[in-house]
Length: 250
Ligand SMILES: NC(=O)c1ccc[n+]([C@@H]2O[C@H](COP(=O)([O-])OP(=O)(O)OC[C@H]3O[C@@H](n4cnc5c(N)ncnc54)[C@H](O)[C@@H]3O)[C@@H](O)[C@H]2O)c1
Image (cartoon, rainbow, N blue to C red; front, side, top):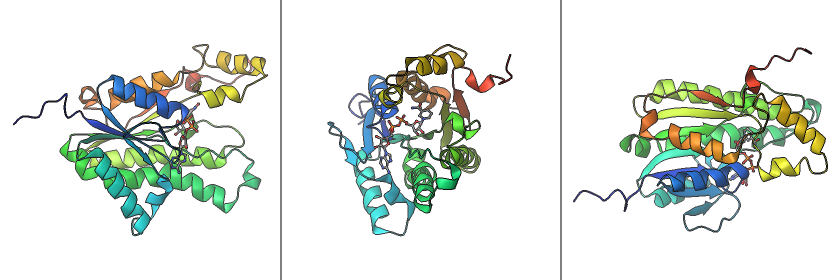
């Protein structure tokens, strides 16, 4: 019997789903008819949620890795058509203050977990003509003081996307979205009591505002759809034009 597509929708696995952009990704994919398996170390009030630390994926020989992969595979039920690696760890401190744990957690969560997650789902994604989408950042190329570990991890994540796209392109697509400042509740909270600073940040983006989490979700849904079937190895800027801005004082 031919499965009814409405009964067996495509599944997207979204990490970091409890965060500002993650929640928008969940809503955006659901609105587009996907079944979403959310993953976060925080609980979420939804049935298809796997509460877990994706750092457990980084040693493929470990029991933790296998246990988490088994839980994720059970949740997607063979229908996974997209893995969205969205979770991230952001350390903001001077380079001289970074310690070994800052580096380890940053690289584990932002770089290595996406790799092992993609590899764990490569066969399932290939069967479903699917793709991996990494939520990278404008920090893959442009950064500022205090962001050495985070920016390095995002540059490496974009490199990983291109390298995997070249090697795995015949099996599955691999892409990234690189947002500039997105107006998540947490970002806005960071500007509490400083409306001038928030206005300056908005004005510095050529579009005159910050991005909306729903805008990230809309692009993500498109990149993971069959309509984007020739898109592979792309690191898409989603930055209101700030990445094109020359910083000369004129
Ligand atoms: N908000 C922005 O302005 C912005 C800009 C550019 C890129 N990004 C990227 O977008 C993505 C989402 O960012 P956000 O602003 O929603 O961040 P956020 O901090 O609101 O959400 C991140 C989520 O990831 C989860 N998480 C972190 N480590 C985890 C782990 N080890 N295991 C499981 N879950 C874990 C957190 O619990 C949280 O729910 C990140 O990759 C970030 O680098 C954000």
